[in-house]
Length: 402
Ligand code: SF4
Ligand SMILES: [Zn+2]
Image (cartoon, rainbow, N blue to C red):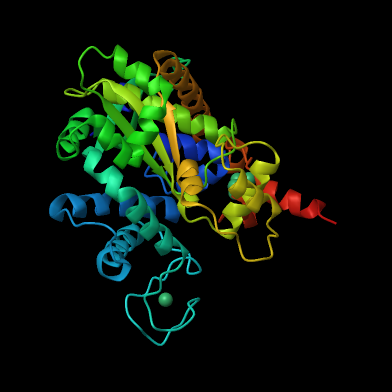
């Protein structure tokens, strides 16, 4: 008996914006290896901290929404249980935390691992960052969230579709976002009496309403209802006009496009990215911020005191005490949404999908992984890459060091 196979037309590759497209752009080969035995697109594996902090912010919001517990939250009592929950979830997916930055023990035991004592749990860097993000953003952000973890999904025609070559004539693109809304803003105005009063009390609104593009957008929107898309990034703010700087913008534009096609959505007036490492930077983050400042690649201005402290900081010494305002200004990035920029972003991501498809087809045709996927990443990505021991690109660089 002949078994019928699925017809080609029904195989539609589904790409996740961060897990596939941004991962692929970080390094084609690393992305392929992370997908293990499966050809992409498949369940993406991201760096542990990025997944962890996303999960923590989502869980913290749900907890806030349930009990309206006031801030600040106590780390051990309120936040640590959320961390353990997320850690377990990630372990199921085969993702384990780096011991140096996250204490994964729930109780004291005989194993000290990389902690200072065996009296676990310890509040190491990643926990400190989670605590800081919840307590500094939560009070302003959580009351404005209208919808958390909305799954966005859309379909696009396969770029440069070729009969007999391309895997499908369409591809699907997806992502998960949180949405703030004018409805929630209005709800919160009541106890404050006026929007102006509320703006002064809510730093997120302060950033939003200071932004001219946002102001223009809400004037243009015919109803008075609108939405704001938010995303968290477990990294420092990228240097101005760097690859990541541009790609994060494209990501938000694409989310705005996907959201606009969902039933019941309101026009998207802006996007906000929170670069959470800025609220609790590591030594390495601060060194990179120092580099950006020295090279004039920081878009955040008006902080000469903090900037001088960082510029003059000797990286081998204890790091300088930065102002809260400086850290928050670097954490919050408002992304203007415009039709033109949405179209540009979609074109860019079409190009990325085309590149992934070409590599996939190349591998399917029998070429080996390294021939099919390009190894190219910045030094920092290579240093943290699990696959550097068998990546020729990385080896080549090592061999040239005298
Ligand atoms: S070592 Fe660098 S170039 Fe090689 S796969 Fe990893 S990130 Fe890519
Ligand atoms: Zn510990």
